[in-house]
Amino acid sequence: MKKYIFRKEIALIIISIIFLSGCYFWRGSKIIIKRYPTNKEIREKKLTEITTEKAQDILIDKTDILSNGTPGASGKIEPSQSEYIVGPDDTLIITVWDNPDLAKDEKVEEDGTISYPFIGRVYVSGKTLRQIDEILTELLGKELIYDPQVDVSVKEYKSNKVFIVGEVGKPGQYYLRESRSLFEILSEAGGVKKETAGNFILIKRKIHGKDDEYSEIKVPLYRGELEKDIEVIAGDSIKVPESKFFISGEVARPGFFPISEKDLNLYQAIVIAGGFTKGADKYNVKLSRDNGKEVFLVDLERMRRALEKGISGSKGIEKQIEELKIKDGDMIFVSISFFYSE
Image (tube, rainbow, N blue to C red):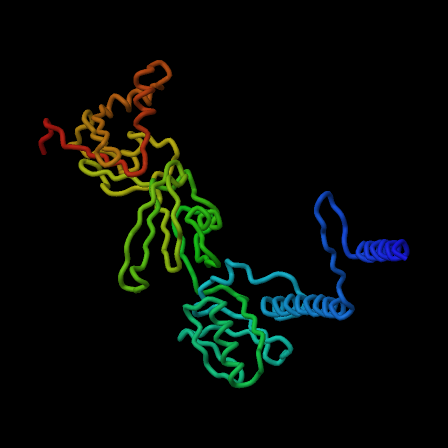
């Protein structure tokens, strides 16, 4: 009897081990419990995955609608355009998703407003496209449409202007669509004329946007190239002056003259000013350069004779003539001769 009970206990132990082996795995000396999900949990998991996937699809579609006004379109408003400051004479394209009757091209009037259906006049000058988008969305949502999807872009840029005159390839009026540097806007204007441009660029800029108050910025030029670059802002007037020299004293026509030739020398400059007067001191002509940092006292009569004979045989005269080629901003003074009397 005892033997039978003992065998029965062993059988029960073996059955228990077999049963538990379906729920436990041995890994070294540790037991890892693996729990199988119930049918209810499986159904809930599938439902959650489907709902999440659908929500992502809806979110993607809504993002595209907000950025483009049409579902499924890719791309958003470029940062440079979205930050553009709208002003008078700009033309805006306004679209409202699923409302083609509200798609309008509206020009910004001089008072800074646009006229839009069912809303009336809306002030938009000085605002970015994102801000205008938000204003129209709010107004349409109050008056007409539930949760309107509005998109605003620029059709014509006409408000943020700069003016370029002087020694550039294409002087005129240019429009700023985004932040631009002086180098970029000059390149758009055909670049600086290296042969005739002076040694600086003058920018006239409004102070705090006031039309009657200006500051002047001088940007150095060296052989037609900018020595530094700065940002250009709307309303700037940019002038690239012609290279000039000034002559005074005993010449027929004192004054400013353009440097019309690349290799204009001192003697030719005197000729352009009408030549010497009778009492001119031709032997001591003064040339001041770079605001007086360099001063030359020149025997111009000797230079004239050398030029008439040819300078190939005189290296000293040849070097002096080369050094005395007229540069932008040069100032020439011809004094009266000590020996002259009327």
